[in-house]
Image (cartoon, rainbow, N blue to C red; front, side, top):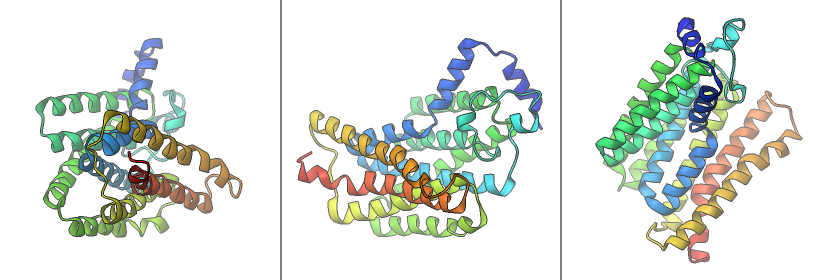
Length: 290
């Protein structure tokens, strides 16, 4: 194990770096993705928003499957006397590969491949490397975790970009591809017990249902006024954040965390976030003239 690399980065610990790398790590957390997807999907470029959601939810599912299969310990778990865990709230589940790095890299490079802009690739590369360093500095991942993650992130973004751009105007085939990915991942619901896969799978299934309904019954346009776009994003954020934060304590009344039932509740909660946020909420655009 590359424990020495983790120790090397933690040897530079001070108040500034603690804040800086915690901030970098925060950029790869759920609230940031919700914010960015809301802005892009509702108000900027609907197709890009769909592709980014597709890439993010798919890579998250792949990552959590690999995590469950390897069941690797994190640095602070394997070497508690040598490594400090500086961000315990984001160190759930197993270590290999890093979900933060893989999801973040896929998300960034998915947009880079979609836009084809050189400066976007440069920015994506810099941010991805900073995320790699941050997860080691914070003591939650080894070098091999983040290295494999960044490679997987770029690979997934590239492959999914090829698929999406080829079929983006053929919704029938594209939706069949979405469903095929979900079907391929379905057996792991019975093979893995970590809640992260249930969340990822819920997001993916909710996204698929949302895209089918949106294309068939809504088909909203992102060509609206600035005021309408701001209202769309604001209301959408409220809805998704209420679902994300409000349902967890409700489900917690019926079972404890870590149980199979709680994992199923998490699947339902995250399914509702993507399904309602990306598929049902846009119904309001026409009703409220947004």
